[in-house]
Length: 242
Ligand code: 0L1
Ligand code: MG
Image (cartoon, rainbow, N blue to C red; front, side, top):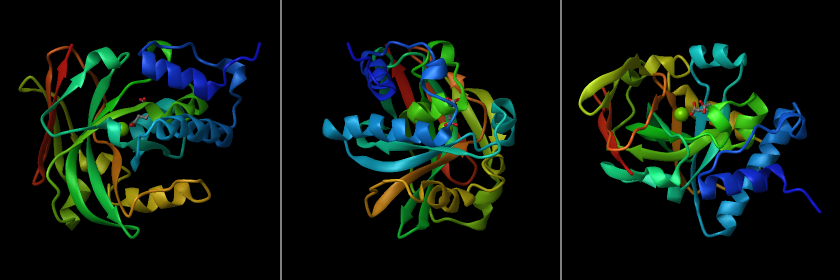
């Protein structure tokens, strides 16, 4: 009997909201191979009718890079079904052990950022206990699970260093700065272009880029109201329903 491929295993884990063990030696240490698994994984979603709407960067802060022992950021693909309307609900029944992190998003048109917005990313590793190696998280589409984008604004130089709060039920859970994202989140666009060169990524003319987290991620609990507040840019929010 043929064993299911890593992409098939991760696809089923996401669809059934059941965590799977890490692959260990099956996946291999090569990040290029892991991106091929990610492409296969997301292709399965597109074949079921989802649309590619953008990209995300991960491990964009010095703290996360040191934690993972890496020197380069990673990237994943965003589809339309991951998008949650601002203020909308996330069904916890369709996730394994989701976490939320405050980010900024860019609207990218013809290779440049034409607008910026506060955002919340929902990450949900498909691996048991949210534990993975770098190739494993790349294969798992960098834990991408959902995202909310607030109101779009013009991109100004101030975006380089704005205060960020992650609020849960009206209480401050995390404090950070947009400067934690690559030193300046505006670098995310060039990084995304560089990282995806040579990959088969068929983006629409106007697409969303989640630039990275401004603080550590926080577990998403049933009933929680989550709000990212970015100085000068405003808010993006969601609530978790059981
Ligand atoms: O968006 C992110 O920075 C997450 C990247 C993958 C690592 C994780 O799941 O914490
Ligand atoms: Mg993120």
